[in-house]
Image (cartoon, rainbow, N blue to C red):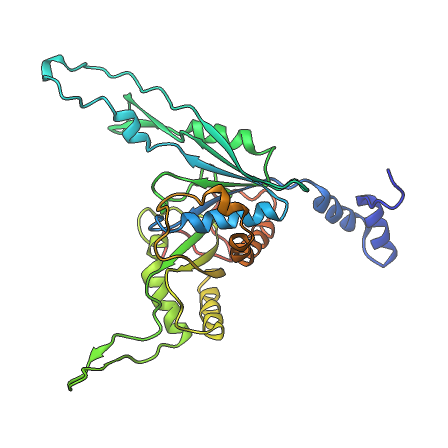
Length: 336
């Protein structure tokens, strides 16, 4: 070992000379040097059609900063895949009484971007997440098997720093079985900077509205965009933050947004940044193409949010149970 290389024991010894306790310093040093478990991130959103570019931009920014990132996407809706062929147009007496489960589609893997100088890489892996067995029943419903997703996550833990779960559908439902972190992507169509506008009597029929304070605007945003956190199903999780995406130019300045963020923090919703997305992406419900992942302007646009999100994930306690109920720092999902 090189003489100048610091070890946990050397760090603790230097701390003890400065008056600190050797055992406590050693424990802190060993914790910092221990390899961290990769983050398995699940984004939550009520509507996901316009959010794929945001997710791809965050992942690309992480990869360009030297991290190994995996986008793990669901291959197909499990119900549609498994039920295909069950209700065929044939006479009832000729239909099979029992249906064999459909064969799973083959997984696909592609490298969207790889750094020539560092370990940074962005990989897209598509596989079946879950299947159902029509022959097995669970309280009257076909039994769902989510072992394909669990196996895919387990097989990627040693190879990546961050694993981003991208469901084919159902973005508003948390994944308490596999995800270690949940972040909300809140999409804003019209920013609430004024209350209801009323058409006044007169030739011009001018519309006026009373300006809202940042705290009032934050309350409207919670009501309008974060209803998925307080509705059905009531599944408590630790929420790690909220990222806002506006589909149009924001009518307020940075000071106003800072006031909105302060009120969000007060409500237990950690703000992780504001983004501006194209109103109508060329590829709806699709990740950015590899050429965009290589574009420095595309990556730089998402760099600030990606850095804040990464800091929030790295600040989480090591080994925290992802299915545990919320503690300080975020609301219980599903609890008002």
